[in-house]
Image 1 (cartoon, rainbow over the protein chains, first blue to last red):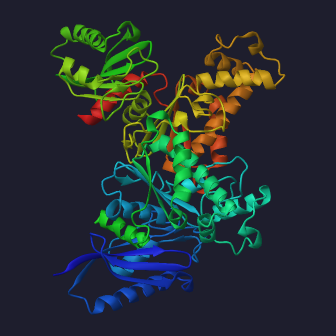
Image 2: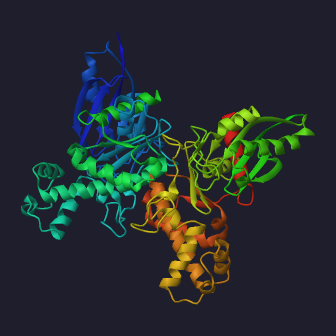
Image 3: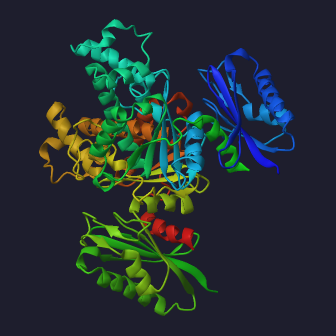
Length: 318
Length: 318
């Protein structure tokens, strides 16, 4: 029997992951290539096609390809383009959906990685019965995908859900976007690292971080240190959670979600990040919302949510 | 020929306005009753029915009643209830939709007044071709209605769009909701009045407001004074607009709207409020949004938007 499948592609600055998934989220094939090796997006698409074709060659009877879903930074669902992505090798506006649909002769849907994660959670994860929820992805930056009435919010121009750039501190930390005080300068792998260095300056606690350089420190080290009882690591998580919780309180006032999912490296720190976030959010919402909105780890934390989300995106279209 | 019509009802703390409207927003009848005269919501519904029936008695052949739309503070679209409305005479949870559908034997849809205004703008006003926009109503408080993908955002529990209660100043002004620093304590008729009194304390400008008591001052006086060149009135508008613009920048990051409409007394102050709002919003959004999002006066500023919005709400349902 032939199984209907789609290709899910998760494009990151360094690596691009791909997978072949059915409607239930079963992955039959997984692979990756190095994104930054291909300075021409056409050659990049060729490389993916080659991998997929090699796999399918011996399985022709078994799978029927139905479409391609792509999650990528700065991808615009409406235009199908990747637009001015600071972390990708391709500059300017790349007609990504068009390139892929030409190469594969298949329908292609594209959106940013956080939106893909939100759809992945809705189709394959813990949000399968939810119509209104929020996905926060905590990586180098902070991404978000908003689901309202069971649909992703793209907004007028396809750029909705940029919660990493809401303003949380007046004249605060400089952000890669050019503004100051954006949420992701505090709440992200980079943000918590900056917080550790702020704490090194303001506090006197003994901590392993006094022997670390800024360039060497990774978010994972902060999680490990918090678990080991390091006071600066613990304070850094608390501050990060409070900042996130306050920002989420304002998001709650906008969309009144049933739940908020956290995904990404920082979300793996468990109660170190979840407890202060939950607490600060509840302190800052209207009473009608207090205690009602769940903050949950993504159910796909250890799975390839980005590839599954990209696959789910195109399943929603076809 | 019979015209299909609906009843639109706008319930306020003091007055309740009603109207009979067709699908195009033509009003064939308008009336009001005093809300706080009826301490039993059933008697209130009877009073409205009496007015409507008196009008229809001689026009029986002419109109066919199709439904009832209600805009009211703290009204929940999902439950049909008015829930714990601080400014209404009825306390607790009132099954409003049920009471009206029983009395009139018609379908009833109910939502809060700002949501009704958003729907009114979409169905009868300047947002007729828009799928993603925001309505801000500036009255005693600040209300908001969010339209995404052409639908009102109610959220999981019906309480989405509470932008009056996003947090804008840490430990800021005390709000009626119990929190501190909510947007509506700065941006609303009451908010700008508080700002005038803050400016009386911090500035030394000559101003007519040094001869006014807090209780007597009305937002309209501040508009008149700004037009007459009063420096404190001008500063108060500027601060109010900056505060609103900054908050709207965060809303833009959430939903990427095509336009933001302002409605209510303060919106009638024109460029005094629009210019600083627009300027502060553009300063605080990501570059991809800058200069793209229109801030517009509601096209229904001088019409009975609340009644029309309530009518539009039920037209959307039936």
